[in-house]
Image 1 (cartoon, protein in one colour):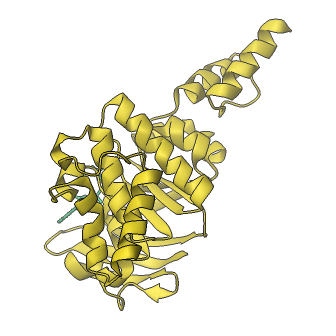
Image 2 (image 1 turned 180 degrees about the vertical axis):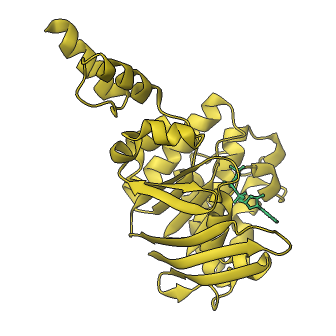
Length: 279
Ligand SMILES: Nc1ncnc2c1ncn2[C@@H]1O[C@H](COP(=O)(O)OP(=O)(O)OP(=O)(O)O)[C@@H](O)[C@H]1O
């Protein structure tokens, strides 16, 4: 689905490269989580997946990014947007139509689709994001979680096979956060959409990501299954990355010889404690 080869990028006028020699492959239907401290290059990497870098944001771009076989240097952002849906932190900056329905239909009208197909896609997108019944609402009146789901609906209407979400829940309240994360899980598990997600909720990534990559100062410094990555809790902490609470507790119990391995998710930790108390 995505192949990144020897990618380096320096913003125009910047002293340092924001991405340094990144190599990465993302498979169809995979759920990839991106971890890294502030400024490590997570957003910059996300912007390379649909061609915003290097087409709209300029700089020194070396290496290649291929999306479903297209080299992003050669394909336009409009073409790439049909393959890769991009969702950013702040939903308000991505909503500008008068009604929920118009918001979803907007991007489709530029694709030259017939009215019936547009109607079908709008209906499907609003249904899957749980926004049906709100078609005539004014987007600024929605809750944070609803707004972000509307952004996702308008991106999904283009029928991309890949969704890139850059901290989509960071500006939401706990309920909105939960709604958006559940939606992401559903899109991955039930619609087989490839997910690339930057998210600070490491508990969620532990449970649902297939693989994690860790960025540090523009370099890809670690890669593996969530369990393998969180096994290196000390390394992650030094990079300023939040460790799941279950892993922190697991590490203490392991130190005391009560657990064999620290990287357990919430459910596994509870099971291990229950077994220990029974024994
Ligand atoms: N438009 C820009 N012009 C110049 N430098 C930039 C620009 N955008 C980002 N950078 C620099 O590139 C580096 C990587 O930034 P980026 O936003 O990709 O990191 P991040 O991991 O997403 O951080 P955060 O978690 O704070 O969003 C930082 O040093 C940042 O200052």
